[in-house]
Length: 278
Image 1 (tube, rainbow, N blue to C red):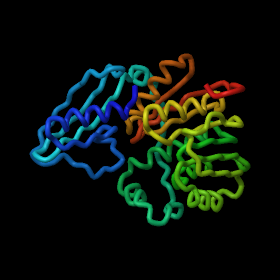
Image 2 (cartoon, one colour):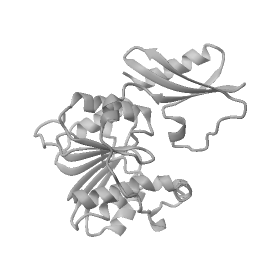
Image 3 (cartoon, one colour):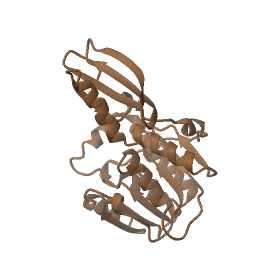
């Protein structure tokens, strides 16, 4: 399954009918940009399309006179995810205002929407419970997730984070806030990484949300991290399909899901495996 090919095929099919089309690889209520609202007078449809290598493609379609908006709610089976037990969490931690990067538009969204606090509360709670002494993170951005994790770790915790974009702002903030930890951040593309040189107690996967990219990042961490935490499992249908596929392939490992605003899955404990990543 190639999620971009599926998206392109949907777009071409709609455009061939003479309509302008926008395809979102997320359910309407989970899109990162919350500004979309159903246009007045739009007709709505919800249907499942059969597509090669994708037995369940669930679309939500909104038609206006000018444009068709298509939200992909599901891009494949999610039977394994549906069967995962749901774990409790408290959700009462808030990021302090001082750590937000200057000009970051997410700050206003975070302050206006209490649901955005879900993820960071979960990160703190998991690190309070698991007490990792080493963390690897794919998708650092401005370091907010790292902050939520590291605040609950013992002094001397090793944190390594990579992001395809600049990590300068995140590095400055985290080094200021946590001089007691061993921090190393790098601008790097996880897609080019084939092996982690060391093992970690916890890995956080929140990078490229495409299906194949998510599978790659989970595989990169598998065998090198005792626990793997994956973000945006319900926010992006392609992350959802990748996690379901991985869990269906690698059976026998414990996993739980958390009903946060973006959806999280924690896999582990996992064995450490020498050699290349599986």
